[in-house]
Length: 425
RNA sequence: GGAGAGAUGGCUGAGUUGGUCGAAGGCGCUCGCCUGGAAAGCGAGUAGACGGGGCAAAACCUCGUCUCGUGGGUUCGAAUCCCACUCUCUCCGCCA
Image (tube, rainbow, N blue to C red):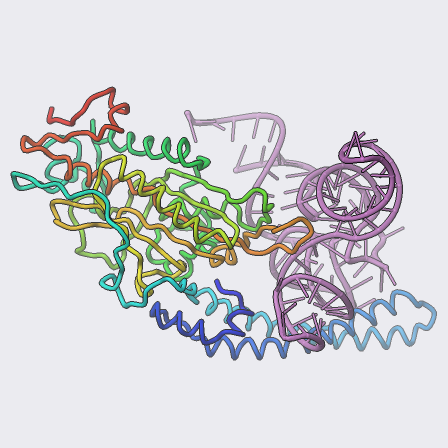
């Protein structure tokens, strides 16, 4: 959410952001409502001031019963009007909130203008895509042949877009979760969190999933619970409606969670394999930082995520998202894309964003710059560190051998009792 | 699921015969005095949001409104009375 005062005073900037991000938001209507609301608010407050004053008078003096009765009579009418005005104000607030919650964040000046992913900018690349003396297999074929992925049975148990990991597959998933958590807690200074996988609508609104992306989330029927689409939601809301001390910042959290996405609107895309699932695992990094630090914290956050891929020896590139591909809540975003041999292309495996004060304002997360000073909104950031399922896919495909076995990256071998490859049983 | 208790400012904790209560006291914190420095002691200050005005202005000053879990109701007036909901705690039952 944007600061209403900022919107009021900088309508042009907001308009540009709406256009750049192609968001449907009626800014003019919002500004008009804002003007009318303030006019009504002033009239209402005047009446309340009158009522408060007269009520105090009634409470103080006691002897002149006739005068008191007359004042009560008068205030009864005033209270009726106040009630009407308050109802009007509530209607303004509701309609304004409706629009304000759909205003996108303002892009950082460094964000390249553009329409879609074709306009994203490659910042750097790491590693060299492997060359094969044979035709590389897609990970779903490799996984089924190794007996570690079973999509037919996943379909039977749950449906399409679900995965079933068996044997070494399940162990690989678990090894990657532990490896990433160990790395980020041990080397990068993050505090580990294990959050609820269901959250209420307040949390979903706080991070920006609601109201705009309601159809992307799974909702529990008959209750105010949503399955989390990412650990970003529970972890960012950890400090919802809190005022933190400047000395506490920056706060860095890492959380493993399952993630649940309806993938509405993705029919027919990535229907095979682990790339696009209704449920997948992810290790997520979340930061709470002072505004002046968020820019460099995004760089270090991205570097922390990159470190995972470097240690796993997976070739990747870093893309800077253009304004049109930036998303709703982010001011600046890097995507990490890992090389997938079967597709002959890079695929997103991590997304690292600086939300500036956009989420903090929605979720009421503030900090006090110095003791005695006014509390202000801090900045939040998050990034995948990284998506587990897509990492499994990348490992299977990049490390596959002609005989169908898969070499294990060295950093994972301790999690496999020292074994160095996956082979068919 | 059954029975009971409770939700107040950064924390703790008064206030429940409705009327200068946005709220005593304590702790913490900030500033000042004291000290070679620190502790102790003493003095002052210390909730948030919104709107108007001042200011080039975030800050800051000033006036006003709202907020004592949330939402409604009664009343001239509610932290205080009534209703609903949410959450927390205790006991019982059940369960991993």
